[in-house]
Image (cartoon, rainbow, N blue to C red; front, side):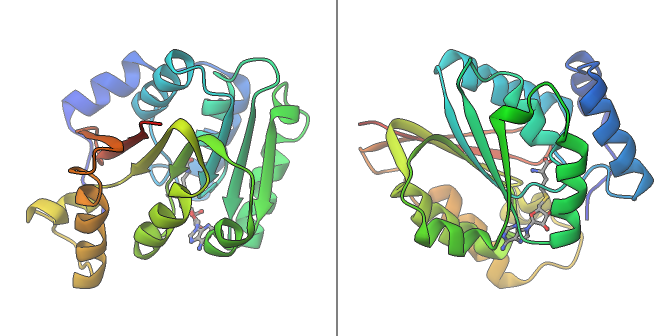
Amino acid sequence: MRNEPTNKEIYLNNLFQIDDPVLNKIENKLKEDGRWGINIGAHEVSLLNYLIKSANIKNILEVGTLYAYSTYGMAMSLPAGGKITSLEKDQSTHEIASSLIKGSDLEEKITLVNCDAKEFLQNHKQSYDLIFIDANKSGYMDYLELSLGLLNPGGTIIGDNTFLFGHVYGEGESNMSPKNIEIMKEFNKKLINNKDYLVTMIPSREGMTIIKKMN
Ligand SMILES: C[S@@+](CC[C@H](N)C(=O)[O-])C[C@H]1O[C@@H](n2cnc3c(N)ncnc32)[C@H](O)[C@@H]1O
């Protein structure tokens, strides 16, 4: 599904590379299991951390943990007392992520939950400053609609992979269900003309859609 990275993307990931023992351990495990690249890259971590620090974000919910590369990357920017909760449906993936985070300096900031994200969002009442959506593409509209009700005033939702490997602008090469393409197009445009939200997209490697609740 993913194309080889361009020189620009390699440059950006090298520029923002973080040499951290826990992130390095997660990277090694992702590579060992043939899953490296499903996670966000160092450039995307820098974009998220720029937002977390500049907007003074304290509470984050992540939809889609994998091995917690993004989870740990975001936790590095949280202030004292800040928390990130990350949701992962697959039990063995959740267990690997938990073992990679266990004993790390940031463990107390991180809660990993083995659950279906939609069920969690439907049944959960706590609100967040940032909700980062990075799971199954078929669920993006459900996650967006449910996340809107869990966002603090001034809070932000970020969807990753919102170019859907080029399919939203007609250049996707892999097989992709037309339904998922429609879901992602709808996700990207849903709130653009709504005065209660501020929306943009960052043309990162896979596309990031940023939605800020104004009040
Ligand atoms: C793209 S990966 C997440 C990558 C991670 N955020 C990172 O950058 O390091 C998506 C993850 O979402 C999980 N997932 C898929 N469907 C889910 C669901 N319904 N609820 C929770 N997690 C789900 C997958 O098992 C997979 O591990």
